Image 1 (cartoon, rainbow, N blue to C red):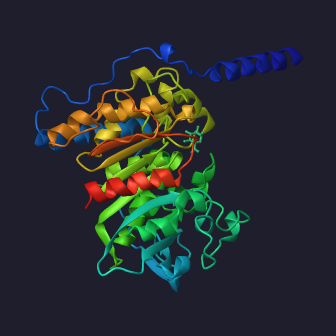
Image 2 (tube, rainbow, N blue to C red):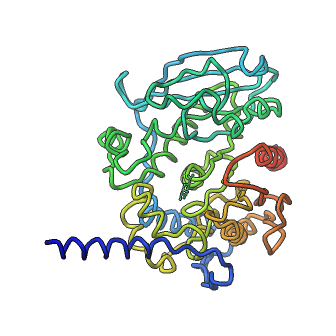
Length: 402
Ligand code: GCU
């Protein structure tokens, strides 16, 4: 018995140490060919839309993120609070509980929307999920605090959102806590939408993934924004940092109502190429976060190079909409070069639509954004989303989504 125990402990620790080998040496990455984005039969934008795009979307659905259910039939809202003097008197804030099914016991998302006060017409809006609750995105004391995600303090992540500055630039901002639709843990599906709405959505929990649900929640936020008369629903820019950047990309791939897309430090399973052995690996993400992707994705743990796609193809699904990919110099875990190369490799599809891509072939110097319809920057610093990033995203939105 003891021997068996010892044997399994040794095997376990060997497995763990095997998992912990992470490469940060560009010379060791190798030069694997990327799966083919444009097959020879795809010559025009129309060919892309008709055949190749749906094919690629299906590949991501079957092998990685799972299905993307549609809009539930019985959504309804409850306006919880409106403050016409928010953010130092510059904004109107609106807090809305969006019920995703019939009745007041249905799963819901609590939406926080800020709109600039000074405006004569509907405004474009940046949207994204937040990590720690709506009350953490600004120091605004009107934000309702949900007990479950307390005690994280009011305004704790203000520097990541900078709502007042975004408003000052003429944009709105809308968010919800990602845990509203599925708590981020391997058991989260049991209490989230995947379990509670399986009948309504006619979708089994294992048919989609946590990232799939967060993305789907962003589409439901979009449904709501379409009903807000002061929001320009044709100019909604979807954003996300890190795991929420992965969700934003997947949402935009499925839902073309998002007019522009920003991925910030989204890394493995987001904007970074999986076949590059650098930073986080497919094995590690699937072991550490088994709920993020569907079970089928795990068959690629040891051999991501056998995937029938790579993340440049996810980025290509955004075309011809404006796409911004942002990395950070000290955030090697996300593989900044892999993010740049994925954006670069998505260019041929933008070219079919006559849009310019990045305009450079090598990763730019820190703090020198490059590109036009597809943009990229490498901010100096850590894994984070800071005002520097937002400034670039706002400039990009002004230019590409005027
Ligand atoms: C971990 C994970 C990343 C993820 C990040 C985050 O570092 O490995 O894939 O993007 O968490 O969401 O903060």
